Each structure stands twice: as C-alpha cells, then as structure tokens.
Length: 144
Image (cartoon, rainbow, N blue to C red; front, side, top):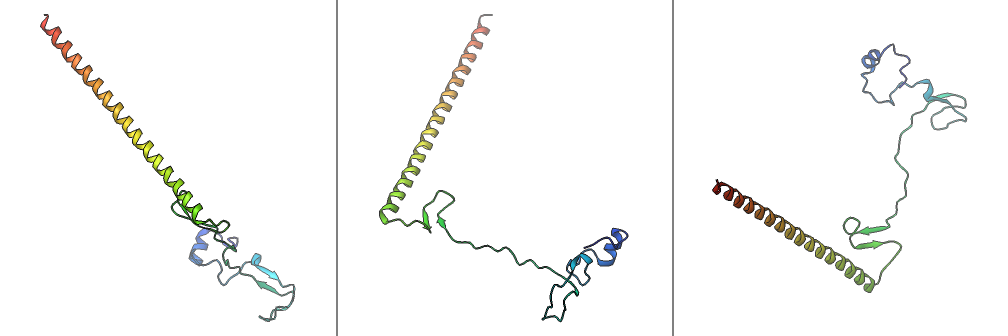
C-alpha cells in the first residue's frame, strides 16, 4: 500500500488496523490504468481509468515422472521413463547391489575387529605399565 498519504505509521495502523488485505476497496493511483480498448463485460469504455488487482494463480509447471527409486539415491529403480530392463538385467543389478552391500558389511566387520584388537593391545600395554610401576614402587620401599 502507498504510505504517502499518512503522516506517520500510527495514522496508518489506527486507520486501517495494519492487518487488512492489500487488495482492499481503496486503490492507489499506481494501481490504476487507462483502458486501451472497450471492455464489454463491465461496461468500461476506452481511455477510462480503472483499478487493476492482480491475483497469483500459482506456478505454471508441467512435470513428468522420470524415475521412481527405492530408498534415497541407492535403492533399486522401480520405474524409469526412458529405460526399460529385461528380467535378466534387473537380476544382474540386484546381484551387483547385494554384492556391494555384502562387501560393505565385510569391511565394517573387519574394521570392528581391528578396533577391538587395537583396544585390547592398548589395554594390555597399560596393564603391563601399571604392573611395572607397582612392582618398581614396592622394590624402592624395601631397599631403605
């Protein structure tokens, strides 16, 4: 809305409540246009000044389904608009995907075993160090 006709924001808020629709009954001069031709439906004639209200009708998009995939970016393709697979190709893809999953699981298990082995070695080393310190501490006390 045009705030030029108000002395302050208080006048605007008090007069209109500040929360009314912007497409209300009063229109600003910048929302009016001169008709370039007669408009039959409303009885408006050429060169008459009329108010214009615009209404958003939403985006104009034409969407087409291209691909449906199971999961997020790593599952089986359930539908593809540009490519169709035979049963053999689908079976090969499923076998390849399962082999990839199995290899990942094997790597994870090996990594867990390596971590457990290193943790056990670290704990054993700490225990030996503790025993040595305990043994060295007892020996020093006896010699006095």
